[in-house]
Amino acid sequence: MTKGQKPRFLRHAVTLLAGALGALALGASAQAAYPDKPVHIVVGFSAGGTTDVIARIMAKELTEELKQSFVVENKPGAGSNIATDYVKRAEPDGYTLLFVAVTSAINQTLYKNISFDLTKDFAPVALGAKVPNILVVNPQVPVKSVKELVDYAKANPGKLAFASSGSGTSIHMAGELFKLRAGLDVLHVPYKGSAPAVTDLIGGQVQFMFDNMPSSWPHVKGGKLRALAVTTAKRSPTAPDLPTMQESGFEKFDVSSWFGLIAPAGTPPEVIEKLNAVIVKAQDNPEVQKAFAGLGAVGEKTTPAEFGAFIKSEVENWAPVVKASGAQVD
Image 1: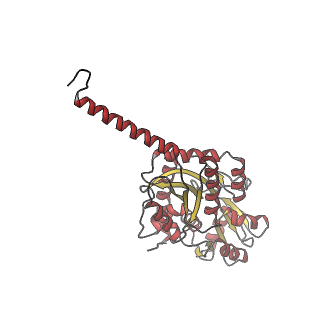
Image 2: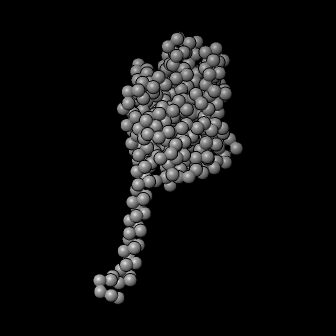
């Protein structure tokens, strides 16, 4: 070893350290650049529905804030399971995301054979919005409160029917939860969507329904339906005079159609945090608030961890309701 020359082991250590630091710098640079190409937000329902509309509101905010295209891609089918499985199998790089809804939490118990675990196969990003359900009745039903409906149903066992937008939907499960908690003998009548269900409710073929607020509220204002309660824990800004189910005697009756963003498990935490920050910021945007209000939706800020805990609680809370309803899909 000549004078001034470093020992071989020391030169080797310096080389390794330089390489490691270079890799870290490159990784940090790549994360800082995210997103450097279009990002796909997959929606498990057709275009035009509430999930799709809220996803597009969020995609617009992400596009404007992060200066890169966030493209909504609709993959409907199997109650959103096709889209969920697709995203589960995607590269966990932040470029394929899922706009998840309450349906996926229900599906964990509803489907006998399911290819994903919502609480393990995904990284939660942020809750986007909640849309309350409202308990509505045909005006010919002689009740003006939840208590009166319960009393009337008990006085007429087996004679009342409640509608839903389909077996296993959040609308169906809200009705089953009510039936279970109140101890009612009522019939469930599933339809292929809210529109035909509401049409028959107005026509008197069924007597009540827990519907998403956007599809029933116009009929309430028009006098074709009577609203008895909102299903969320707090009253809705759209209908501030309408009591909650909890105020009507049903403790911890907190049901909503919720929507949020998740990513494949293993997505870098830096990417998750960047996406979360934009969605949280969007909740304060007056334009977003106005768009949500038009849907009867309310934005809610969460950290990724809070959203993950919320998803877990939804899976657990809906499981006994689904089992009690007897609904199951192979």
